[in-house]
Image 1 (cartoon, helix red, strand yellow):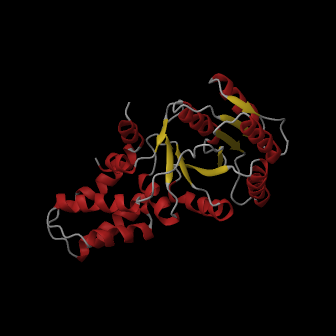
Image 2: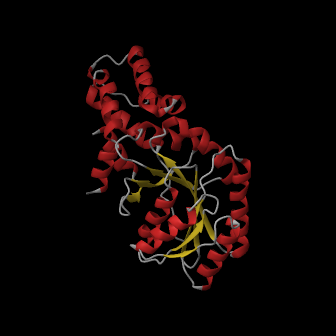
Image 3: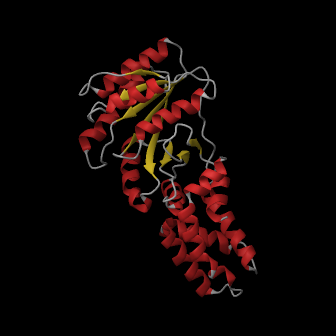
Length: 297
């Protein structure tokens, strides 16, 4: 199944909802103030959020159109423009690229860490996994079992060990073996738990101590079904860790497509990867053109 087909499947509900909301609206030929008010309302109802919706409408107003088809095309262009972020640099050559995977409970971080490792392995790298989830019962064991199943190397310690110490050991091993990719799975934490959020700051500090020339990438895992309810979570993680980007998980048919646009636009944090399902192959780079095509067609 192609990435476009997977996106279409994952955005099936969001696409149907959006089409239903916009179908009648774009049949009109009189694009007056009532049209714009209705369009704003429909986009907000589609989880785009007020701020992002107003920006999209303003962009559309700058492009004159006189037919429903032209209006729909103007909407598509405006949506694409909201996702106008530089392509992520996945690997810096001749450096240890450390991917720190963070997020709240239940978003699928451990599965995502394995999928990301598989992504890099298929591009010729030998990623090392670091089991830094020492807080949750069987957290490290889960990653170990999955890593063994897919023949990945993993560094771990007992439950209750200092997560930062595990990361230090893992990065030291990766550096000594001249590896270019290390991926740490961390414990899920509520954004309201200051102690656990502080632990992530400690991990970042210790990681740079383990390898001063480290290239660190912090990726925040967000469940695509949360919708705008996840914005508060993302904002807190952003304030504390300033993640480089997002990984969207559980894009499985119930995802709220508008939210995916809103979270990037409002927080200026691009989506790097998307997860489609439970299989290790259900993972790919985020492609804004394919995403908008899957959402609107």
